[in-house]
Length: 90
Length: 169
Image (cartoon, rainbow over all chains, first blue to last red; front, side, top):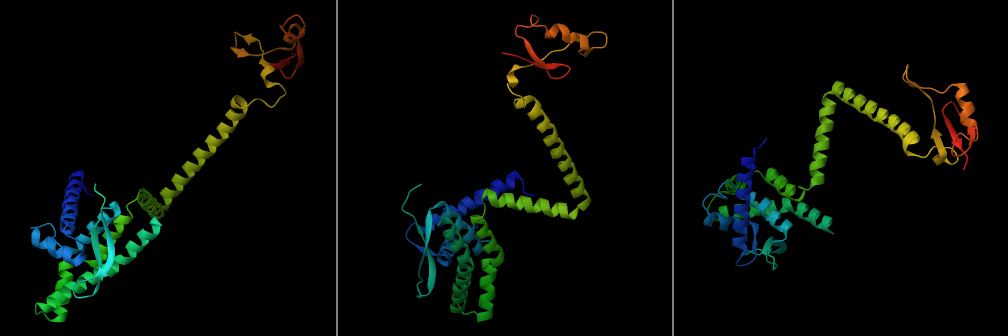
């Protein structure tokens, strides 16, 4: 059973992670691993726990229509899924 | 269409997670780790892939229908664990619903629906009142004046039973 306070805290943490993802995608599309690496480098503790928590965040943003996922090729020419900001604002 | 998109997103999750861990593993190898060690480190850094896949799917399944079904399944499990309680609950509900239906069907037929006689709007309830016994009762002799053509605004056409009768138009 989680208390109201815990829920607030989790939502705040999720919101922070969502914003970090959006900021990382600002310069252009990136695949999941690159986003995780970038956020790790630029934030102290949000993604320090585990890289995997990035994926629920990515899917939350897709569900809200803020980003989209596309198939593409990574830097060493391997298949990868790229995430891109959508054109629509707000 | 939207369902298909959701299904595809959910199906892709396992592959995306695998790709992610592969990429981290390769980077670790490039940094000089032995392959098994590199893979273990990548997994450690990623977290539990099964749990993360589940959390990611939950993003698409957090609709009210899913939560409702979850509650229903939980309730059914609880009932199965406590068969005695389940029987009492089911009997109570059955009895309550049955009684309600029975009483309502009587109320409906008697008070709400028009009575099953021709011209039910012309049916009256006519009776004598006995003050001593506080009861509505009509004795045989009462009917004699009631049936006289002059007694009512409109003549009585027939007596149906002890207290109810119809008056002619």
